[in-house]
Length: 154
Image (cartoon, rainbow, N blue to C red; front, side, top):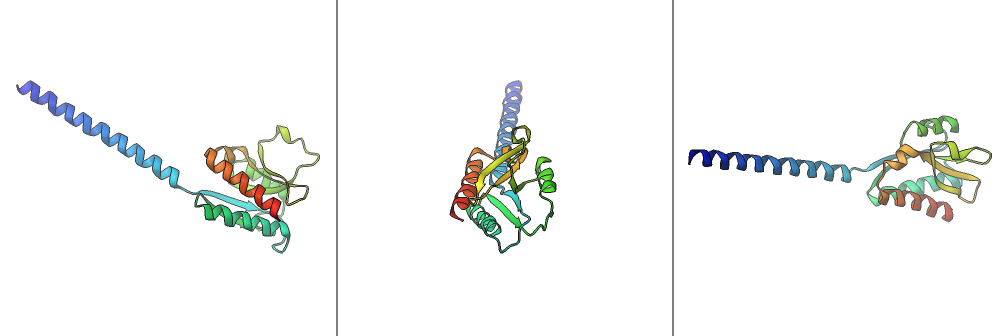
């Protein structure tokens, strides 16, 4: 009888521990899914340009979605050199950058084209593959659609 009671007690303890581990892992997953994606949009043009106004509109829409925390840095406030911004994006920074792709061997880079011929111009919006691929499919689609919609409207 004593042996049976010990076994029942151990089974009970093991069951409680298993449920605790499962519950804790579910909580961590929910927390990670609810965290906003931090994005910096960096441009080198003045705030008064159509491009900069469009970048601010993208940030507003992405922030309004509740999935993103976007800040826009225009007028070269992060860097006056687009190539430096691209280098940061290639290193995995959560950065989207207006970039002229013409004449560049783009296929061999680690950049994702978010929007091509953006704002009826030769500009494309690019970000690093590592950052882009870290998003869920739903957030990738929203990110791409927002940039493309705004680019067509401005």
